[in-house]
Image (cartoon, rainbow, N blue to C red; front, side, top):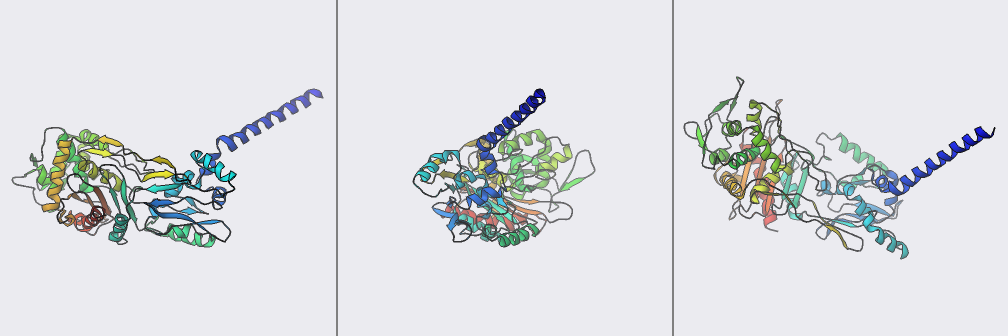
Amino acid sequence: MNNPLRKLSGFAAVLLIALLINLTYVQVFNANALRQKPGNSRTVLSEYDRQRGPITVGAKSIATSTPTQGQFSYVRTYPEGSLYAHTTGYYSLLYGASGLERVENSILSGTDDRLLVDRLSQLLAGQAPKGGSVQTTLLPDAQRTALRELKGRRGAVLAIDPSTGAILAMVSSPTFDPNQLASPNVATEREAWSKLQNDEDSPLLNRSIAQVYPPGSTFKLVTAAAALSTGKYTKKTLIYGPASLKLPLSNNRLPNQNGKACGTNNKTTLENAIRISCNTALANLGLVIGNDVIADQAEKFGFNQSFDIPLFSATSVYPRDIDRPQTALSAIGQFDVRSTVLQMALVAAGIGNQGVVMKPYLVAQTRGPDLAVLDATTPTVFSQAVSANVAAQLRDMMVTVVNRGTGRRAAIPGIQVAGKTGTAQQGNGKPPHAWFVSFAPAKNPKVAVAVIIEDGDGSTEISGGRLAAPIARAVMEAVLNQ
């Protein structure tokens, strides 16, 4: 009798110890992870009773907690509505959080380990707990201009400071009003969520960093950079640019969009090929230098890796294991090449910054409730994508695009602008996307911009210059005139 009882007692003791270990792990070691888990409604409920810290643009709050007399002590509000929606994200009772509301939640909610002293001070002083603040790098005028110029069309704009990597504007269209998802009224939240989920234009999607597109002719800058970096080419080197190019190992031909040869006797300078965006010249150039050279160059600009700004950016892709016909198409931004708007902004910014690509960032600093700085972002070099000499040649070619090429509508009176148009074919009978990338001033630029208009409105290279270039010009002017 005693032996079975001892076994039962021992088993019960083991279970008790296991339970204690699990409770200790959950409540002590894993508590923060559980609090930060998306969709944890218990955490959200408790945080609605504390003053969540603001997200700011400069000194102005674009997300704040407002006292209320209802069920909760505070309700999250977004004074600018949809303007910064894809930056702030939403903070919802039912659907959790997105954007900076999610990735910076520990600061905003006040649960970050670095705020322990603040929490204790508030407790001892009998004060309600408060969260810290998150200051973004965005410029209000540039942000408003980008949203206004997109005019509700599906697309995105991202502007960046080439010398630091600070993101100056990040707009995705169509956008949404996060106030509707932060309502303390459950029915209101459900109705808003249903409309957003059923909207074919996907307004919750951050097209500037979370979506990848074929970059089309804007990628010709990367191919040109790869060729120049071999030391065998300059912007004045003559390259082959027939009316159509026979692709290796096939009977297929790649035509120029106007059906004409580029230059004289099927030859043109690299500079002119970029100016008129000659498909055959850049595709053949890709065949000559080889896919590995282009892939290496693309990765120096940031392809095949992701960026954490701290919002997560999708990975832009340049394929490596491909055949020669696929190499020709990839050299002009087609086949399986895919890029975020952020990535193409980095290509332009790197060229403008003497070949140096800076790591992009959206958060300038975070502060505690007492306004003490917790963390301030220091500009950091991502890579030396090309030499200063190669960057200068690429810059000169891009200036030619704006002055007397396909990008004339990006010109700003009195300021030299460098740019490149792009049309990205989608296939399956879908209209092409319209692209434009640029920076200004051409020397010592203060801003680089990438713009995409989904589905464009035509099939020629000029669609990028006609639709996207004016948007880039307006955003550059907004930054330069601040």
